[in-house]
Image 1 (cartoon, rainbow, N blue to C red):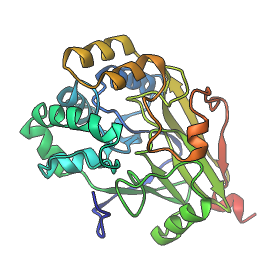
Image 2: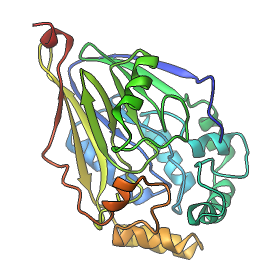
Image 3: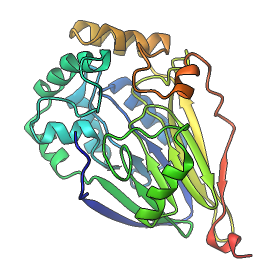
Image 4: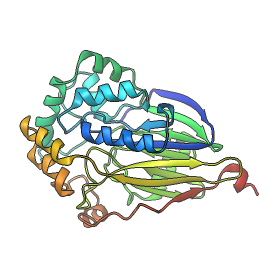
Length: 297
């Protein structure tokens, strides 16, 4: 997939104090999506305070059911590269994998399965999805993207220099970018500018655990900082794995669900490759972004 020069943008307005829940990468994993909905219920979060960074459809066995769950839930969602490729009736996933790598070869199995198993109603929903969402929270301007502000299939990681992230934040004229696509949770803030990736719920984060990730963004009101935090949960990975195997989807991805390890690190920079298999210790940590009122004091 080539970089887009124009993006559809939906402004979803301004949020009052409280919590927002952000997640991405359902990857056709119905069990994980159902478990996430239970997490949202624990936090008493209504649908209009929940945001998905795209790729509802991908590797696992339930593309249509996953899309239907998202539609029925009524949350905010942007188009991931897979939704864009599907709605344009294209023959590859647009994941920006190098040709003939293992990820590319696997995509030649799961992507045709996804194309075959999504309805016209699902495709119509995908056609209406924006590339980006914009909103205000705590006096800060937020932009929701899939890969990056410049390209839907771009990979931005924790190790990506912040200078590159800052250029996109400045170009977009926002204080915070919420991104997805890379599959790993992380966050970084400098000089009141923040890049945040909630992680994905459809596959583990390559840290040898079955945990998957979402984020909460909280603001208690005037003068209080905005609090970003990562949260992990588990789901019935054995069930998801079994359905993948029954439908002849890539065994390597099915095994990742239970081992917590990616089959390969082809898309990863050196730092993230070296971290393979090391348990992520993100829970209980928070990033605080001062609001305008606090920063001006």
